[in-house]
View 1 (cartoon, rainbow, N blue to C red):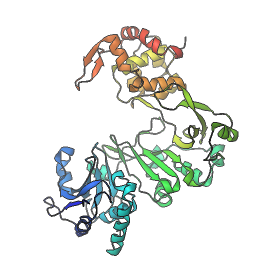
View 2 (view 1 turned 90 degrees about the vertical axis):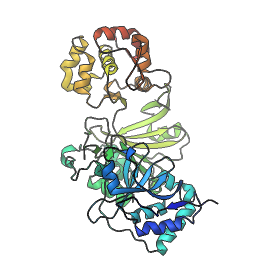
View 3 (view 1 turned 90 degrees about the horizontal axis):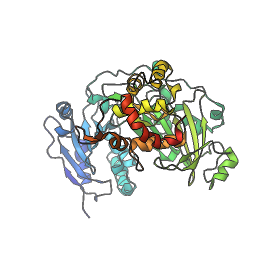
Length: 474
């Protein structure tokens, strides 16, 4: 059988090879390929300048690559500065970044446990190799040193001091509903951290002490969500800064990083308690209905489908309606706790977004209650005295959201498909049919449309009226 490749003889200029990495390399070259994950081996190399030309010099001076993953992602040893030990960080092939461990010792310990959160290393097929690595670490008395948490993503921005707003000025308050009190203690504990910032003491304590997991210190524009999975506890969390709700502000930490919130939690049977009395092994919708009553709503199985087939029981966990609990039955029972956010229809609005918003106002598709501070502007658009793009600029700084439109499942399903080019319908395709085609600077097809004037809206209206005929308010 092939062995792992190890080439640590030449470390990039300005760096020293840690003795521990040298020893691990000597051991790894004797291990069968694939038994410790899907990578070729340990090779010391300079960080490619192409990864980030603007930070290349600083990154190459402080870090070098020692492991390349199958998808082209790199693991680095990074000098955080001062007396802190070198940390292990990820440079993802899609531009994502993050701290894997605060020291090489911690990384090796996590690797031996299948807890690096890197799928190529944590793969179940590498179990035998991890057992051997754990034995090697024990034999060589490798101990994890105490080290301050290192935020590699924020470090990349070069900001020495965090700039995030204080917890008290940016976190919503949650007044619990009676449903919260009906949850079992473990589910209630998960619900208690929902919607809170990653730097909140209760979130830190729950993730690190109860779940025994690493907590992401920040997220980035191109990596806006991080999962924390604890299968033995029956819990998986999602932390994201990009919650599309006015109550959850963007909290910049540095120029390009943000403080995430606990946005979603999935709880599963391994938690060891039922949720609202629903048995995890329920085999039919009728069994759940017997406990909870008729479903409160239904949704499509997939977002590009129109048929509402999945039974849902949705409950508010707080009196403001910011947090919700959803029990669903499809092929089985699933339970999701989540922040009430919207789906993203157009993150970067353009002239087509403005045209649609103007149209939506005149056809009663827009939820005008979402814009209390812009009532006069909405009224002017309804009278065709202002353009839809004016509302987009003034009231939608983070783009057009699904809940800017009426909250009807069938309408929401159609909007999602139409804006995301699913199931054969697409806003761009429809407007090209109306206005003709041209190429953007990036080479993509776009309609020949420069301004969302009312003449343009009127020209597109017949086609849009057919598309949204079932939902237009006369």
